Length: 147
Image (tube, rainbow, N blue to C red):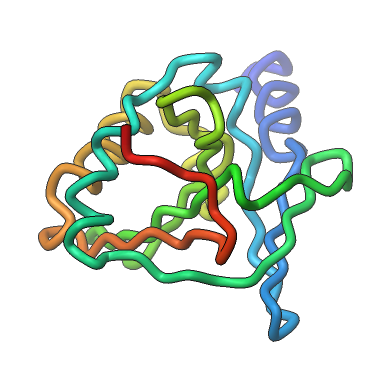
């Protein structure tokens, strides 16, 4: 492995983290993947079947960004789903018009996935919620809309 690859791995593993703190004090960490996915977006209408199907859990939580600054969780959501490796979660910014932007993943290895793979995983979980046991975690005062 070249020193350039080692440096790249070190940079990826030291990416910032988002922290979602629930009312009960539990903290969930999401590895920042914004640089990985860029400004690519997903249409919010994909949320509609989950919202209409009752696959939503309302939570009281606070969100801190990668610079330890408070963010309004009402403009975000967490998509929780399952794959062959178990449960995973993605932190998604939803306050961007009627679009969704993936900003974090709760598995560090996901931060090393290719952008197309991250979007495929995300859209498959939204498109087949029962097959992935997908649920959305929304703030009790959420401004998330399904388009």
